[in-house]
Length: 125
Ligand SMILES: [Zn+2]
Ligand SMILES: [Zn+2]
Image (tube, rainbow, N blue to C red; front, side, top):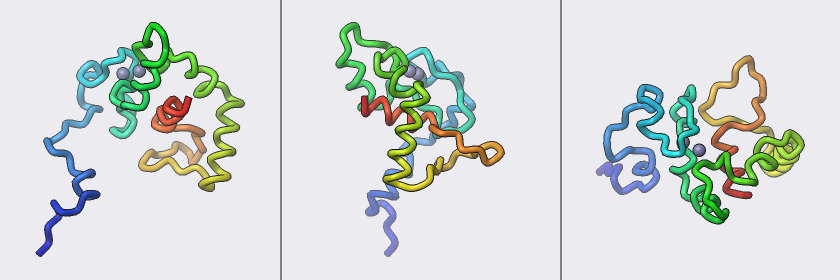
């Protein structure tokens, strides 16, 4: 008998309650850091304070920042162009060409880093 409930990966992809797209909600309905803006895909509509690894990092800073963008590592690690080039080179060496999963790339231009990847970089600060 087919029992999708027994497949843990299937359960991960299946929300337990019906979700309204965040693109259709005011940003204040899901952002608690006060700095988020509505992004063009649901995947990108994530508040930094929803990511436990980021919360753990910002809690390590005295006068705990209210958003990952106020973390002292955010500028040098996530915004510095040379730091980003280096990260891209390391990524390509490990995984090959960058693919932005599920995110359309306008004009086929490589965007460098998606917001989700930037969140990942803050986790690594
Ligand atoms: Zn936010
Ligand atoms: Zn934030």
